[in-house]
Length: 105
Image: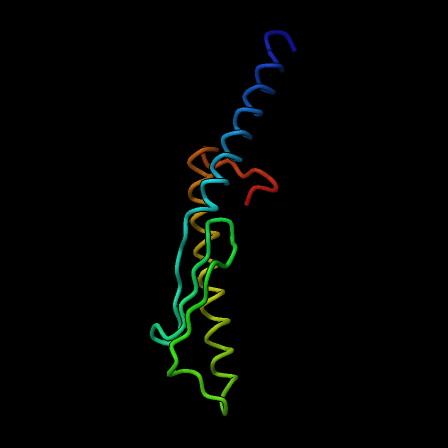
């Protein structure tokens, strides 16, 4: 096609990829938090969906009812991961202009 500089588009795509990778590294240092059971279980995840910490209030530790504690942990982990995904998608959309890039989110 006359007048189309494919090299320009390739350079722009490479720049975008670099910006996205740089932002992902920054997201690894940012955290989000979710709680379950009125704050009795708290989970912190980073911006790239890694769990950083889990805090459990001693009052929910009942050896006779481990299923309740398991449910609270699952709820808090799922909440933290969902928040982390949303944060990452918002931040990367700022770079990509909202374009969905396969393998990024």
